[in-house]
Length: 153
Image (cartoon, rainbow, N blue to C red; front, side, top):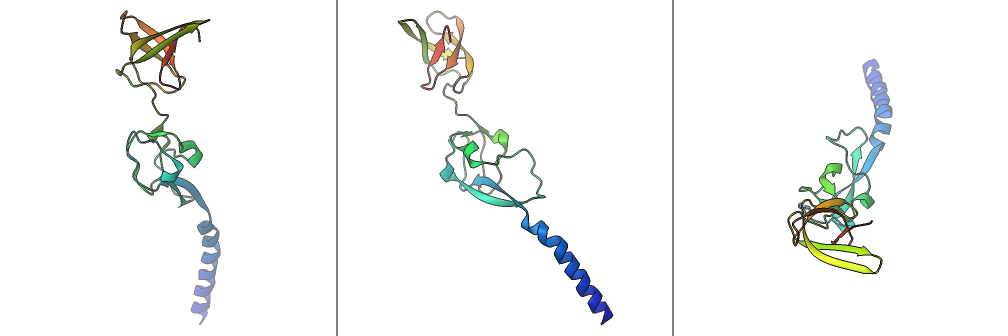
């Protein structure tokens, strides 16, 4: 009987210690479906999943679905798995090697030409572009419409 009482007391103590640990969890956005590289992420592609507070992630993970909306997947994201910070990126508006419009504006003068970006770029990023007509390499800033603005910025 004494052994049974000791065991019951031990079990009650363990239950009291474990109970708060079970209640602590971290809610993170995870893919609801498989997201492939190059896909633009929308909030409808995500769901929340609870992870224990002491769960160890391999890398830094995204903690808010608002951070992910409009981003582009850099690699395949599997359903139910946390999303590493380095697995998403801003969408590329300009792709390396794909012709795009170059825009020069000053005062009332506008000149539009064709260039080949030497690197991919996101909105507002400064990149180098080779002018198709002159062969010169110039620097410009990526605009929201995918054109590259050169000159005074």
